[in-house]
Image (tube, rainbow, N blue to C red):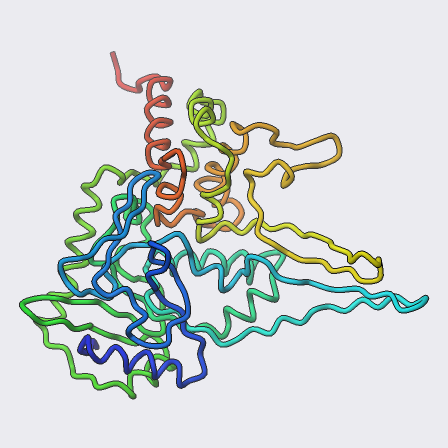
Length: 380
């Protein structure tokens, strides 16, 4: 059942979560972008702000209303709080003739995310399969994930770079979340429809000044999400993803890889902004005395030459092979490894590419070349 929460009472939700001992993270307007940071009160949220995104372009601007969640996604994803960008693994000290190795225990705080979009819930679920249920689980990720509280938000507006409808990940929230909100601004009223998806969510709702939502209010909120979905399916970035695995596998030598490589800088922006990319490496450091050393894990990218470096050199020595590896893994071989696509259609890789490479455009280009090369099955 949906309940109604007045927009002015969103502060009650924020404080109810914080009172449970959670570190609450949500959207904040910082340095000209809507990023994720710690939220202490309602005033921290980017009320009345939205984002304009195109390939290689991002701007924030004022909205015509006072929506709290009237933006798409920014340069950061929630993975920075679950799969830490950099963390210590162990340290070693030399005392006289004794060497002591100490594994660093990760102190994972209770965290809550406010404003998680459907595509981002799918991204977290993908990382769960890799870092919790995969062959090489991460204890650090697992500790953070098991204590996580999420407040999801249905999208009623999207950036031009969003293509979640192509990946079947949005804009409606379809995966479990402790709480789910839909923001409604209509006829001078500003409220949220709120529902719970867990016992923890129900406990929070019991502390809020709620009223049962009317049938008309529920219909209005769902209609806004449905209209957005229909608009996105008619948009220029929507594409058929049902056969991407087969399409990319039979086009490993497509001339399109050369064309995109002429533009790609191998800067790794797309993988750093991506909410599902999980590549990491380790670095060892020592102090000047040589008596203390540490090993740190940090994010890495398949666009760096060192990631695939083995004896004799890098497996993927040029930009063409690196871009092909990234896109083919994300959209094709990820299915073989983890039983799903590695892309959720958030569009970050498009927005934050400095030369404006558009993954949806590259899919269309490869498909067009593929259709030219495939003989027609029609009878003469």
